[in-house]
Image (cartoon, rainbow, N blue to C red; front, side):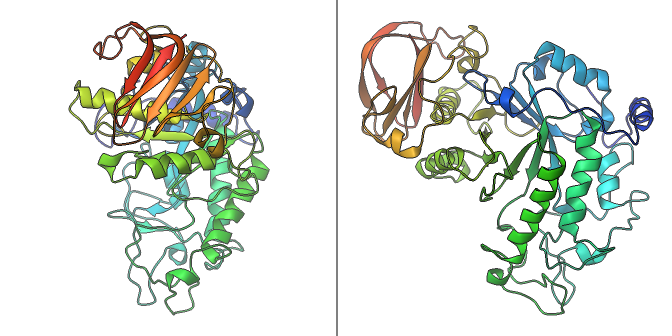
Length: 445
């Protein structure tokens, strides 16, 4: 599945296009993997978040993970047989199509490379687009509003000008349904830059309703505001047309009405990424256990490597992020230095024990207050700043504090026997452990 050459057309695109055209007019069957499958997987639940456009990992590499996010473009650039083989290697795999409905590029590469983006942004060639300029966010004086370099932000507010009877939010939602979901390749959609507000926008005041006057942020964003109403209308369209699809939002999106299945946390609990670990963990626990998402929900935490590869710091960070994720029922996606480099750690398969080696948790979908209480029934605080959660075949300890803590395990457990960090995962049998600050441990029964 390697694809070489920068921004080059893909040779087999025509074959796949012919296959898709032959099915035109008939909605493709959606994959059998669904919310039920995604949320009945044993633990740890692993993921990868691959956004590289020039190449993609092999089927065998991707099949190692429980959940895979790749750009929706790969649905046009890979053959359907590649997806079928991936599912054959891992029948429980969850495939999410990455979609960005916000960032309009004034220029694209070849149509073969950007097949579905040509459709979304209505490009006739790499520089000619018929996309309504009224749907792009601008100030009253015409200055572009951008949240990403060399792009213009699309206007998802419900007060955006209506073109052919619909707002951009309504148009974009139908594009997701018709151009992405109905290929039948995906289990759901990952909506990037999908928040209650766009924090990185280049202008805090802009003309959200096209009336010639700039509006302040409190007239654009916030509960019940035009931006929130717009993205909620888009979510309703997608959910109605894709009742079984997994819909995951990125950014600070409030989950409501069961429209989305869950949220993504990037740089999750990563102090090196400017995050507050304790706050992120609380936010993740609250969002995952809330009533706002479609039941039973799906949460995804993503981290890049910020330490030297192979260093004790890298492995300590990985243990911390994974054990923090294991305090609830989410998936953890470790990446290399960027979103075009895979990463894999001993803790993901128990040092060779196999996927899902921890089994099911003793208590599923715990609420934050359960994990804040003293340890009981397989959940809770076992030392200051240290939280424990029990599974069928092991336990998880996470220390989000700044001091090492000794923990009496109340029984006999065994460290993993790992290859990457044998100083920690040495296979030894223990009844007490010391968990360093910003670290975590997985122990087997």
